[in-house]
Length: 281
Image 1 (cartoon, helix red, strand yellow):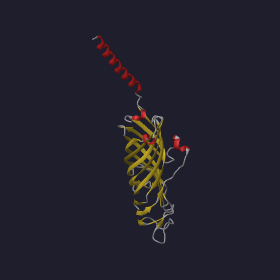
Image 2 (cartoon, helix red, strand yellow):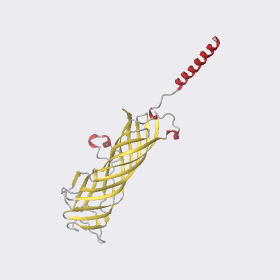
Image 3 (cartoon, rainbow, N blue to C red):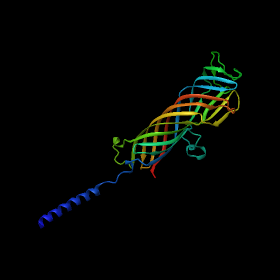
Image 4 (cartoon, one colour):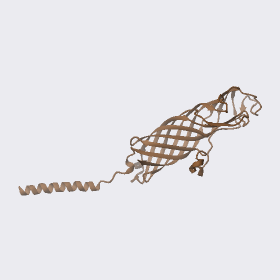
């Protein structure tokens, strides 16, 4: 009986020693293993690309449409203004604040501060009426008009502000690149969809009148994106995105007279690079 007790005691001693040894071998879970409950914020810049659009202008003395109008962005390039509080709206910028509702999905709000500039001295078709045709050096022999500065300048340069919310998915693909410690360096892919309002400050000058610019809710936008996220030391990241979508602005202010309006819709594409941080409160 005594020998049996010794055997049983020895068995349990070995068993619990093995459990203890296993516990000491268990590695602590990496910070990057889970995202639920984390916040993130990023700030960056973009290049914008826009499809041609028809722009319709209305007012007491005009009602006309110009067709297939080309436009471009207004890049600042690498510049200190991206980080100067008083100059942050001069470049084309992106800001976003988000929260992970689980390990893969996050919701966010942000603003895409793009810039849209109608190209000058381009021949386009026109239909409708406006005051004093021919006095702005715009009429062409083939019935088209030339978009001279005397006739029209049309920009959303302060800017084409797309204020939007998004839902996005994030997946860790570090194992594909055989990265052993994601707390030091992690690679994620992200995709998302979003929507919001357009709140541009449109700079417009028509028929030799004074230039008008005023912030105004002008319409709505829808978008989708895909990107790569490179996270360093758990909390800091660089994110690149390709983002495209549809913008419809049916209520653009054009002069100081509130009856003068314009409308347009077009597709856009952004290339974005941003720096940010991710943390758990």
